[in-house]
Structures are given as structure tokens and as C-alpha cells.
Length: 282
Image (cartoon, rainbow, N blue to C red; front, top):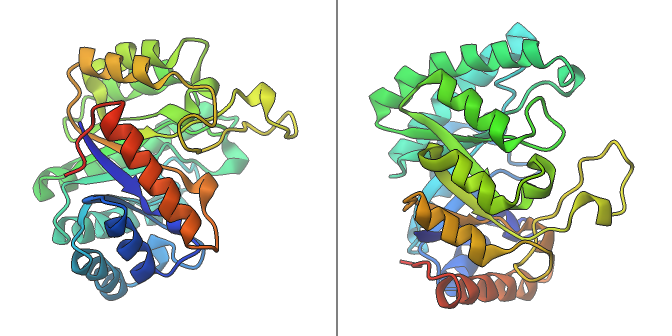
């Protein structure tokens, strides 16, 4: 399994500073996530490619992009725009040398309780995107997100298996584990099996230990050791299901205007991932 890092940890730095720091921390692969003021669907292709070239100039490689678009929105115009945005971003991702794109099972928050509407909308969106992904020789991985129309690990895996699109798989997000079900994170991995095509790593506490309104499906994205996840058992389960893709560190809880902070976090993450979990960083 190969280690990557999500750019969200460096959200307080410019793109150029972000990529330079990621390279300084010893990474090769970057999961490129959007940030306030730079939502992928609102940025021109020319600007996306310009920033993507900054990544390459820093000596890094793109593991994939993670746009946030309401592909499961029951509002037809909103959903259709999300599909068109994804088609454009698939092409941009491919042109930057990556073969994966990632996303959430995102609907319109006003409709999240109407799971049937969101589910049907998401099916239509993925049916439209599957041939585009196939033509580009790309793969998409989707994660359920706390507070949206699908939250559970098993429900998300069953949904994606039922679709049967070879180009679309499951993104297992470790810091969502306490929200996604009653099972252990390792059991979730074993259930998902070969449906898993991408993995996020970060630590969190159970929602019951996080101060937030009861309706908030709270979780965190922290450095391993700051929360309560059992990472060795999760990695053991990933090995057991023969997963050999990226494990991307998504640590934006540590984003800070002081550039020394995210750099130190990234370095600590790499050391733990390589020395304790046995991931490769090249």
C-alpha cells in the first residue's frame, strides 16, 4: 500500500507553498482537495492545470482529485450540473497523470432524509459517469459521509456492489468509522473486501466524546494517536482483503496559518505510516 497525503492539511498556505511543504515532508503522492475560494467546479480548466503543474514542479505526483459535487441531489438541474462538472474534472485529472478521482455520496442537504430520492439521483449520475470513466481509463471511488443520505459502511458497500460498474468503487474513510456503524473499523474493511478502491487515514474520537449539537454527525481528521482508532488492526484487515492501493492521510483538523504546524504533522504522519504501518511513501 502506498502513502499519499491530502492537500487539505495545508489549506492555510498557497498552493505553491503547500506542494513545496508536502515534498519537504518526504511525500511523492498528493490527493488534491478543494478549499475555500478554490472549489474545483468553479475554477476554469486553465487554472486547474496551472495549479496542477505547480504540483509537478515540486516533484510530486497526483494520486487523484476529490471534488465535492451534489451528484445525489434530487433537484434535476443541480444534479445535471454536478455530472457535467465531474466529466470536466475527470478529463483534468487524467491530463495531470492520475487515474483516480474521489468523491462523497453527496446529495442536497435539504433532501438527505429522503433517501429514496437521493439514491435514485445518485444512480442516474453514476450511470452517466461510468462510460466517461471507462473512456478515460479512470476509476472513481465514493465514500459515505456523516450526515448525508448514506452514512453506513455496509449500506454504501451494498449500494456500490448493486450498481455493478467496474469503474466505480468504495472509498473507505477511517475517521468516519465511529459514525458508519456499530462494527469495528477492521470488520467494516472485511465486509467491503475488494469493493475498496481507495482509503483515507486519520484519527478521531467517537461522536459521543465530541462536543457538538446532537444532530451533528461529528468526527475529526487528526494525526494517528490523537483519537481512538486501532490502526494496526485496520491495516491487518486491508492486507487480508488484498488491498494494495493508496492510503491517503486526510489531516485537515491540523491545518494552521503557521506553516511549521502542517509540515510537522505531515512528517509525523509519514514516519508513523512507514515505520509502524509498513506503507511505502514512494
